[in-house]
Figure 1: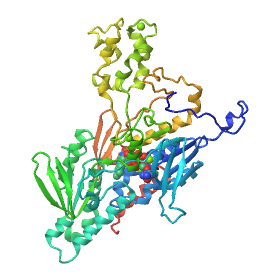
Figure 2 (figure 1 turned 90 degrees about the horizontal axis):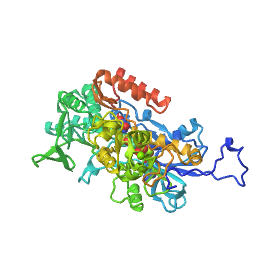
Figure 3 (figure 1 turned 45 degrees about the vertical axis):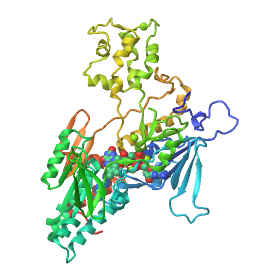
Figure 4 (figure 1 turned 45 degrees about the horizontal axis):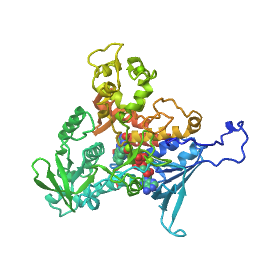
Length: 554
Ligand code: FAD
Ligand code: MG
Ligand code: MG
Ligand code: MG
Ligand code: MG
């Protein structure tokens, strides 16, 4: 078999003890997981850790609930409330897993080993470097910030990726208010110090802006009344609209609300340079440059590749890519035993046109050289599982079923007796591949991928015993698998907009905005907490904020 889920040859599970006697106890296969973010922890939570020898490597010994990071920047929620120690997760679920607090700096795919460096300082024997062998590697390293090489961004901007970043932002906002309150500061200087600039109008930038605005108007202006008139928030977005991955209605609701709140939304501008107290922005339409004095800037304009991933992509012939390419079963292309999930990976969906002749042969059961509508219908489900673009295409063309799709190739005869040859079959499917969709870099995707991959690992035994698998088309395209490919299920997305208002986009074109949506947001995010401990902490942080306001000490 060409890979994918390579069957786990032997098992030490007690229920297998009744099988034929074995000469020696089989060694458990070694699974190494890189990263304890959304992808890594979701994989570990669902993995049957008794089947494998599992090692986890990550420089952070906790999982962070990133969707609440913007709330940490202003003290709406405490940092401790959104993190869960990963050793605690293993202990609670009684999972036998080794954890190493270290950073992986090299993946060696030929020797099947990862090279790591101790994260806690180097006063160990040697310099704290070590090597870990694997049979299967799960790469869930996430992404880093992307400055697009804009000068000065690294030195002068704040970021919002990690818990420490959120804490730094909180401290810096309060620093600005204290600085502007000092005597002998001119009005112009005050205006500069209290100008908060958010670069990037995606969900993170918008949510941070909303949090910051609430913090200013609900808490800070009360304790710094003398300087409130000098406070200003600006968003700089290079696209035409903020929140451009959301429905248009949500984008314009957000823009209107921000305008009403006095937040300046500058769309169509790119930041080209950041200096100590000036940001240079360029208008995309006129090309003119403007200098913007500022006190504090947060950069949230895109995600980049970690060096260890770049190095690995060079090794496996994926140079010049931004993320690792995997197949639909999340295995890194051309790489045995290595899987990649979450923000550091993307699935390259096979094109149906590459496999069209194989599909035709499989469907043509009577070897007549033509396909009847029934022959196509019989295999349609398998086609749709293997090539999700077929369903998307039919939906986008408002086609009710396969008869419409085939009818489009043979003229307008939507009859049961339609018959197509290979050319007509190709013609009917020729535009389908235009509907291939990439999955977004979100926690939702990473978590679903981790869950799915663990499922595959848990069932490797079963798949070995049933190599034909459920899919008749599994062999098409040369990659042989016996497990359904990963399919992302979009559950919708939220955009909290401040002032107890939020916008939500849910499956089935359902858009909702306003105060009630904020309550939906509270309940969804409370329920999504990884443990009861963090759930109680988060909810009590929210309650504390309602009653006493945010804590404005540093
Ligand atoms: P991560 O969760 O980033 O995990 C990467 C892991 O790898 C971390 O544990 C890290 O410590 C570890 N690591 C890094 N380098 C190394 C190394 N060299 N060796 C070993 N380990 C390493 N998504 C949503 O769906 N909804 C939201 O509301 C949402 N809000 C967000 C808000 C913010 C502020 C941010 C930053 C992101 C948000 N996201 C949201 C996106 C979401 O957090 C990411 O898509 C998700 O974290 C991706 O999961 P991952 O496992 O790929 O990476
Ligand atoms: Mg992860
Ligand atoms: Mg994370
Ligand atoms: Mg991805
Ligand atoms: Mg036939």
